[in-house]
Length: 317
Image (cartoon, rainbow, N blue to C red; front, side, top):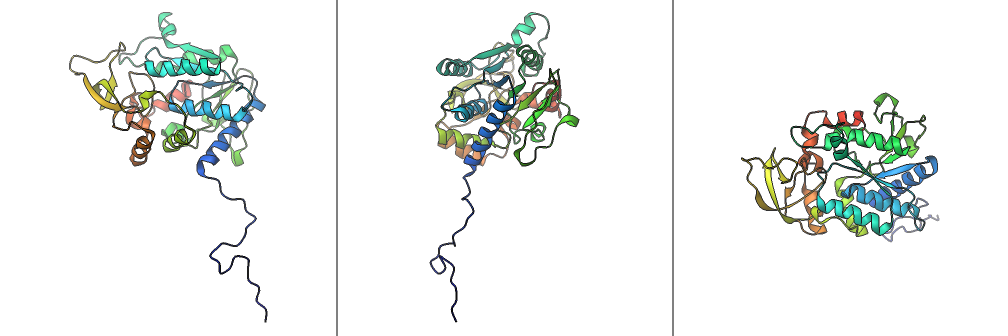
């Protein structure tokens, strides 16, 4: 009797398969993001990328360059400037725009305050004041797709967000109008005056972002790595002193070795004690962390149980 032996049997090697090999997870995430950028380019007339100089928007811009290389990246950038941004981050933003010859639109919160349209908050933070400048800039620029760097792992309001998030003519979010996204099929239909917020990093985690930064050798502002900084304690966080309203008389300033996990308004973004001065050290630190960067270091998300949800409905996130 003749017995048929499959190829590879007895050699310790698996039998041959017609299935393609599985891609590493960063390749999968990159491919998904590139696909989203190209879908938007083909479906919308006037997209714009929200760019603050923070790590997520930096990675998002890097992916946009990849999506259209060797052609020029076709989208302008938009930054909602609170007037309380970290100088290192603003310098990075301007350097990036100049290096790559990009178009930058700036929506200034300070301008709205000077015109009496917005009022300063008692706590000095301006992050909750960004909704109106953003919505009016989107409307004035007739932008029909707005890329954001939000990730589902950051916060519960972001966790239930679609990749294509429909917004009405006032930039507001209505959960009843959001559409299913099966098999990576995205529906960008919208009425005149409406637009779609697009989140290419939805399925990424903080660790994914840092691993991708390390793999791609993406430059970041030095604020993300350990450095000595004058800070003071408020609300359980180390904040940077500034004209926004800190510190108070009972809040002594200390020089500490810190870094930032996320970057926003100076008045609500806390530093963490850290000696992680290299990418490898940051990766080890993030892998061991059990709190998201927003949960640990963003006071604006702690204003109430529904702070981010409220801002999403108002049109900021």
